Amino acid sequence: MIPRYARPDMTAIWSPETKFRIWFEIEAHAADALAELGVIPKNAARTVWEKGRNAKFDVERIDEIEREVKHDVIAFLTHLSEIVGPEARFVHQGMTSSDVLDTCLSVQLARAADLLIADVDLLLAALKKRAFEFKDAVTIGRSHGIHAEPTTFGVKLAGFYAEFVRARARIVAAREEIAVCAISGAIGTFANIDPHVEAHVAKAMGLKIEPVSTQVIPRDRHAAYFAALGVVAGSIERLATEIRHLQRTEVLEAEEYFSEGQKGSSAMPHKRNPILTENLTGLARMVRAYVAPALEDIALWHERDISHSSVERYIGPDATITLDFALVRAAGVVDKLLVYPARMQENLDRTRGLVHSQRVLLALTQAGVGREESYRLVQRNAMRAWNGEGALLDLLKADKDVTKALPVSQLETLFDLGYHLKHVDTIFARVFGK
Image (cartoon, rainbow, N blue to C red; front, top):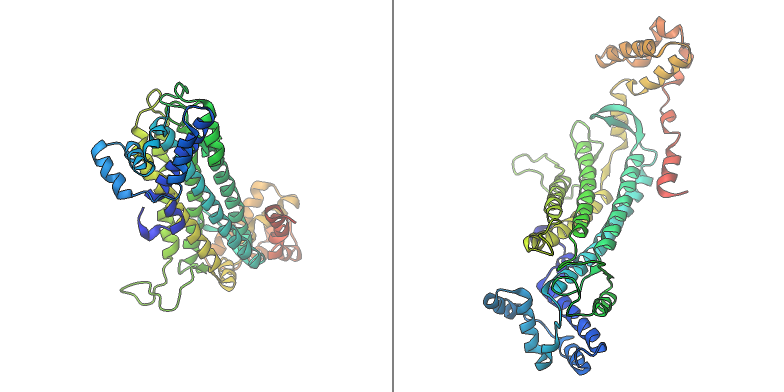
């Protein structure tokens, strides 16, 4: 994580202070459950809460202890005993370090997912607003980067809206899958701790119970979580790439907002570059880069090895912090996007009616001309239009092989832009509801 691409609420989830506070809550809730079972004195559980609830855990002190003991959870427990006093000997009864570490990671990833869901909601709101604003703004659709047939800019944005509705659902599902608790002891068999403790901690921390843990929560859950984030990042890049292409000088149908005083180049004063969407492309690459190591973490040795630990110390904070920043940036880009319908019309007109070629092809087949012959007739005139020899409609009117099947009056009706937009309302109803 670097501060340039970090927002405070998400960063706070991964701070040492937050981590140690969650560790304390796990241990204190476990102590409550142990006291209910009569394993430890009830006054000891009360003392843990009384002295620890408002305590400020000293990160530097914990780090100092860890340098000696070479174990992060032991370092924390040692510091906790300095705060709680003699009753601290009843903390962590029958538990293993991963009971604390894994349950804490579940809490952090669930909280991170909550922020990411809120971020997607921001982006969805921006996409919906701009989609309706440009619902009827006719633009050219492109396949392979080449002019295809007309659509509207609103339909483009509606497509992204639908994609991010799916993105939201993926994050919700990832949160559901990762929000699990494991307090099952050194090898997951509850040999030295009762399953009631796990159930109690899970309920208190807003988690579900992991049905079968080993020493750790199975890492397929984590892999699914980071894979979901990777897919969302891919959607961000698709949106960013669309805007970057539309901002190219020779296209210029839309562009990022350029503020007064902003400068695009140290050398060329005229430059207005798509720096935000280029940045989003790079950030998306980073989030996706964390998916592969998460997948590789699934195959741990037997009941657990530690190969996943260093990976998760990186990817937990970095993937969530980066995606949080990217989603909010994307929402801002869409909200302030400069859109140029007049330029869209200019670009539509550049190909002299070629965008209507399929409709002419279909009309010829319906008039009794074979499909191959119809294709040949339209294509030979389309290629002349490509070469600057005239507008497609005029060339077709002058082609006797075409007018033999289609009267000039009918040909003219085939070049109506409105024909391509007749189902825009249907698409919007599917995406946004009626």
